[in-house]
Image (cartoon, rainbow, N blue to C red):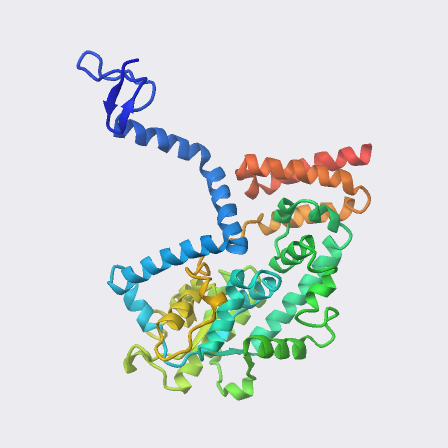
Length: 423
C-alpha cells in the first residue's frame, strides 16, 4: 500500500502531492486540512463535549482520588511559579487585595454551597474548607442582619419547595442520579445525593444539621451554628455604627434592580455593598496606605454587580470593589508568612476550584415546569413518570440545545402526561 509522509506523519491511504495530482487523500494530511477537519468535529459535538467535560470535572471535584488531587496540586504549583515570575497579568491586583488583617463579610453564595457539602469527604469540601481555613489563618469572618435575613429566607423557600414539589415524589429522583439535573436548588440536590448514599433518611434530618427544620428559631440557630463551625461572628447594625446615605442607596438600588431577578435581592445587595464602603470610611481604610490598605471586604461569587456601582457613581467615588473572591482568600492563606499551615484536608483542595462554577442543571424556568408536572402526576403514577423523565433526560443528553428550550420541554411533557390521563 503506498504511503505518504505528510505534515503529521505517514498516512497509508494518501497519495503523494504532485502538480498533476495536488490532493487525493482519504484523510487530511496537511495542517490546513486537519484544522478544518477538527473544526468541523468541534462544531458538531461542542455541546456534547462540554457536557462530558463538566460531568467529568464535577466527579473529580466531589469524588476525586488522591492521585487526581495530587495531579491538580502539581498544576497549581506550576501556576503559582508562573504567578511569582510575573507571567500572570493579574499579579498587581492580587497584592492590592491582600490584607494583613482581613475583615470579611461572608455572602450566602458561599454559605449555602458550604452547607451542601456537609456529607462530602473532607478533602472534597471546597467552600467548607475555605471558611475553615480562613478562620484558622486569622481572618475575621462576619455576617450581619442583611446576610442572616437572606439566609433565613432561603431556608424558608427550600422548605416550601421541598414539601410542595419533592416530598411525595422522592423515589423518582432517587432511582437515577441523572434525575437531579431537574433540581435547581443546591441544598435539595445535596439532600438527595446524601440519601442515595445512605447518609441521611429524611429532608428534616438533613436540615437539622444546621438549624431546626421547622424553622422555629432560625436566627438563633444559624448564629450559633456559624459561630461554632466556622468562627463566623454575627454583628448588628448598632455594632457596625455606620449610616447609609439615602441618595446613594436610591442610585445603586436602581442600577441593581436592572441586574437582579428579584427586588429584595437588589435591596439586600445595595445595603451590604454600601455598608462595606461606609465601614472602610469609618476605619480610614484606603489604598494610599500601601498594598495592605483595605481590610474590609465582602466574600462573594457575585463580583459582577460591582459594574452597577460604577454605573451609579462612576469610577471615582468607589474606585476599588468591595468584593473579594474565594481565589484571593486561598492565595492570601498560602502566601501569608508566620501562619500555621492549614491541615492536610485543606491542602488537598488545591488548585482552587472555587472560581469555577460546576453547577450543571437546567434553567430555573424549565425546572419549575418539570417540578410542577412531577408533583401533579408523580404520586399517582410514579413508574410512568420515571419513564418519562428518563426519556427527557436522554433527549437532553443527545440534544443539549433543549436545556434552554422551555417551550419544547413543556410540549414534550404535555404530550406524555396527556397519554397518562388517557391510559
